[in-house]
Length: 69
Image (cartoon, rainbow, N blue to C red; front, side):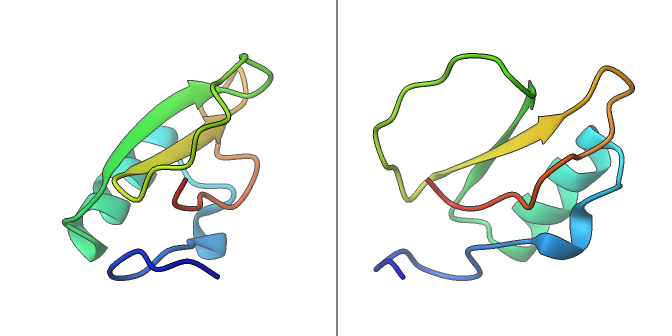
């Protein structure tokens, strides 16, 4: 998929609270910074190995699998 270091996807976190998911992601892959963001918010399309966007709904629940990018 990519040449990024460490774990790169977290499908098991769908349904989890956003901040808790971000903490798990950063613990499992210390090379990334997890950013909690409301689903539907416009984001840049650049790919970065040090970023994981955690998309949440209005109740702070992860709505899609976080991935590096």
